[in-house]
Image (tube, rainbow, N blue to C red; front, top):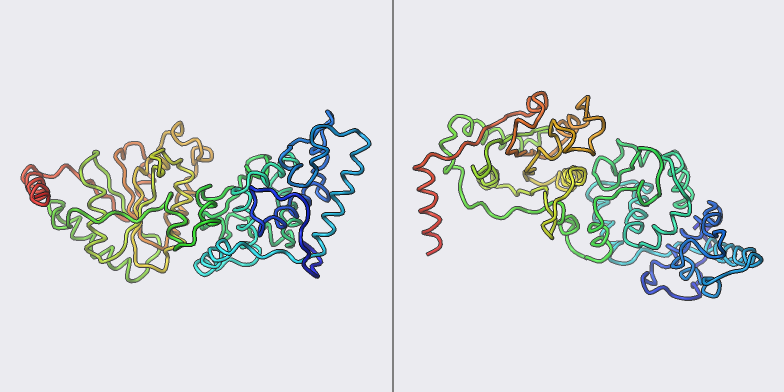
Length: 403
């Protein structure tokens, strides 16, 4: 709300889907879309009704919802303009308590500036409240440049600051929290991409550690069942790997990436957890399935990876990314989200080079990966099936633990 002077209480019909603390903020954004940004041209359709009745009810236009006469349009616009002017002369309401606390946690972790912070807040509201997304559809198809203009107006930040905050090199993009779909034009809800809807839900409703905000995408691993000593048959490779990772963690070396490959069931995941245990560090897994055991897309997994790299960069931890073939497979038919078959590989290379936390990437099918990509890893280790004697020993120890 611009030219803020004093706070006034809102009036009119309350929408039960939007909490009272957020109502005026959402109402201001909706009215700004409809009036100065000309969304009203789509809001009024030619059949004497509104493009979205929920938005109309939210704005207190109940008596016009079923059918309005052409001469009512001017009166409706006057009502909306007067309400917008009233909101425009008031202070922007504070954030809901839980959201405010969670935003402060993220600000502390990754040091967002005010423009980036406000874009993150708007993106959370956009995903959390369907009504705001529906209202944004009145702006029709938005290009990336037009999106900058719209957000500049809604959030009261200079266009050049919004453009910088939305750039691929911004903290929002590098952290994976908020990114922009730069291909063509689309609705605001489709152009602004956030980590996940679950993340938005938890930011609005869960007053917990920030780790809980992203648990659907990045999870702390369960304790290891085996030790590094159980993998002694890997020989010199393992003897090199343990001190290498130890130095990487303690010296905060950037761009450390290890690739484990081999048939399913050979213990790649368990070795990764055992390494973290040996080093005395935490370990988080970038999830490949959500809490309903539904597969997570490659695009979202990479966002989650970037979020984890940003949120945990000051902690002594390892990251594990299983089923890497989902995101770097050589067959584009399995990776439709990769631009142009990732022809120059620069996009993935930047991810590997820029990570602050050592990452262990796991694949069951190294043949699906471009050999040039495989060479980007510091070490690539094949994890074979354990020798028969070792398998017998592991089974005996597991059975003994059950007794």
